[in-house]
Structure formats: C-alpha cells, structure tokens
Amino acid sequence: DYQKSIGQSSKRASFSQNNIMFAPCNSREMDGFTGFDGADVAIIPICGPLMKSDFCGELGTASLKQLTQMASISDSVKTIIFLIDSPGGTVDGPPAFADVIKACPKQTIAFADGLMCSAAYWIGSSCDRVYASTELDTVGSIGTMSTLWDDTKQLEAKGIVVREYYASASTDKNKVIQDALDGDGKKLITEILDPMNDVFMATVKSNRAGKIKSDALSGKTYMGQKAIDAGLIDGIMPFEQLINQTRAAKNNYMTAAEFKSAHPKEYEEVFQAGAGAERVSVGSWMAFKEVDMAAVKAGI
Image (cartoon, rainbow, N blue to C red; front, side, top):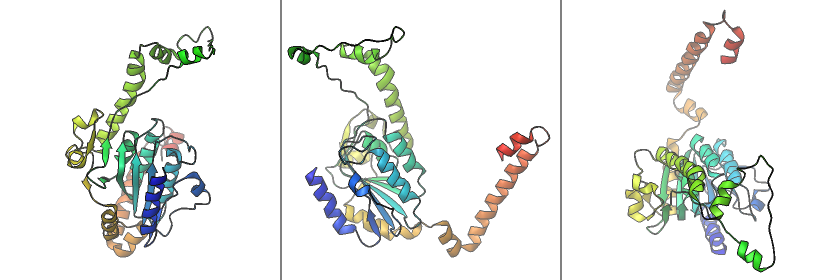
C-alpha cells in the first residue's frame, strides 16, 4: 500500500497541472473536495480490493461512483481516466458504478497500472477505451467465486460451542451456505454464483461488443499482446503518452455551448430536428386526449 501511494503521489506531481486534476485517493481527501471544475482531464484512481463502502480510508465503489458523477457534470471536463490497480472485489458495488460510467457524457478511459482483474475489469470494460501501461500488466479474471471458512474445529478446540436457532418457518434461511459449509456447494454454485457470473459475462460482452473473445470469459488472466488479442484492452502505452494523446484530442469534444458557438448552423439543425421529434411525440399523445386526458398528460 505504501508503494502504491508513492506511485500515485509521483503521478500527481507530474500531472497535477496543465488542467489535469486527480480525484481524492482516500476518504480523508474526500472531505471538502468540491469537484473537477477547471480541469480538462479528471483522473480517478481505483486501487486495491474493491468494496461498496469505504473501508479503513480506502474509497469504495459508492464513493468512486460519486466522483465519476462529479466529473460528469463538470462543464470543463472532457475526459475521465480511471487509473486502475486492483485485483477485484465484492460483487455488490461494481454494477451501479459501471452503469454511471456507461451513462457518462464524457470520454472515459480505463488504464491498467498493474492489475485490472475481476470486478475491476467489470468497471474498466464500461469505459469507451481500455489500455494497459506495460506488457506486464494483468487484466481479465472474468469470473465469480466465493470462499467459505469453516472454523468449527478450531472453536471446538478452544472450548467454544456455537448454536444457531431458526424460526419454524425459516427452513431455507442460510441453507445454501450451510450446505456448502457441510461440503455440498452445488446450490451455492447454481443459485448464487452462476446467476452473478451470467450478469458479469453479459455485461462485459456488451461493453466490449465486437472485441471480446469467448475464451476471455472463463476466468483467465492475460498480459501484453495476448490481452489485446483477447479483446480485453485496446492497446499498451505509458501513462504519459495517454495523457498527451488525450490533451491533443481534447478539442474533438465540445459542450453544447461550445458547439453552438463554433457551428451555429449545425446546432440549429440539430435543435430543430429534436424539436420536431418532440412535436411528433406530443401529437401522438394528444390523439388520445378524448379517451384519457390524465394519461395523456402523464405521458407527455
């Protein structure tokens, strides 16, 4: 963790200028953080095991989602880079975080700086582009697993007896987990892990449509050219090169106000097309005003 913080500090020292802004790396830095206004590029680090809530100062996916939303609504930000070094984590946080990335109106880039695996790849694959920093970065591990610890013998050896009691109607409460602890993990796999994994794989296939290879969905990890060949990443480059490319291309991304100012004729054409579509929509609803006016109002 110390080495990671040193690495992040080094990157901050190199890029915390020229309209590039790093997001907070921990919950302490989140206090008083007001957003990314003034920055062209927002960099959001994602480090270590991922959980939904903050833990021991490390930001959870809920806080990372909040930072992404702050960057999304900033008029100045054109690109959001997620600087990722994570082996993955719990399954409950990444879906909502990834949905926010998918809905983001800015250009989004995932950049592997060590590991982008499992839940971290779920998040990274939601970006417009995915890169690795070197040939040795590890990406993938698209799969779902659960580890259960049975410490009953250890407790018994210490003279500790654990007794559990359930309500009469609660015949299935914790049954899947208890069966797995007793050595029968079939229902744990079919009723919990498989459904989770189906959503994981479907999401990655959708995010990387036309790129991802089926072999990459079995839980394997990849490095270098093999990661490119598997469709997991779009290329390999140093972080500095990515920043330079992003800054060189930033003028390709405009706010509505910038587009209107630079291309007033085209802006008016787009505006009128949208207004025309809205008139058609309203007219379609109004055709039913004699039938159910309340429904028409609600629909409009």
